Length: 335
Ligand code: COA
Image (tube, rainbow, N blue to C red; front, top):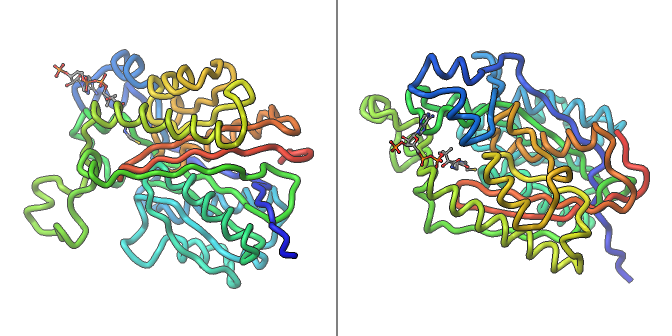
């Protein structure tokens, strides 16, 4: 009889660039205020990569931390999955660049593009690889240099985004966080609500696209806010119920960090008390695919997870894409 393998997150790691961009710094760039940004987003500061520091560099740094914590050698990595919307190049993939930086010569490598939902999509793919028996040791990296596609003349967007990376190791054996029920979704009909208009084959780079600032991300903030709350709520509730759990069984909510008001709305709708909601948005801003990994690492580092605890991860992003999954602590899960 075929045995079904289970997938466990056995280690996490993060990397944040040194430079900090505060709300006061932003006041000098655009017509905004510290008070407005805090009250509308909950953000105080975000990290910004150096000019010579790229998505693959930050990703490799986070990966090294996770590998070290897992006690895993680079040669043992079977596949590297990278979630990013700000890759070093359109191609080759950032996963291949990270494979080279790490010297992970036995690993296959590819990128996933699901915007801010990327890490949740990557965890779903890693779970399938492990459960099918195809791979045993998987490195997931989420890394973003959003400052490279952010228009620091546009106050509607430039206050929101930050740079950073998170990584996790997914293996066929625990102890760790078992990846349980996954719920993913997408709505391509709403693709224009948040996008990078130029640089792809539809609008290749020209003098005009540069002059029109089309190589920076554009967003309809109000509409995105509305969809984010609705989609994250339904994905989260579906995941909880299809796992045979109740809202009160969730020990921690680990949401995508786009806006404190969005996080609070999801927590309220999922009936999860504030002290069980993990928030890093205040210090990191929205780091897209990396944000859920940065939040998960905070929870792990604080050593708050106990055996059998259920964690609910939920994310939303451009596409539109959304996803939720349940992680259950199995055994003594420490770093
Ligand atoms: N500083 C000061 N005022 C600003 C501002 C800023 N940085 N940005 C916008 N404003 C102004 C607007 O121009 C508007 O002025 P008006 O009423 O004179 O037109 C006013 O503030 C209100 O703007 P509004 O868009 O209604 O604010 P909001 O409460 O919806 O907050 C966002 C704006 C962007 C913070 C919010 O919509 C949001 O977080 N959306 C989701 C973003 C997101 O999650 N993106 C990533 C998806 S993964």
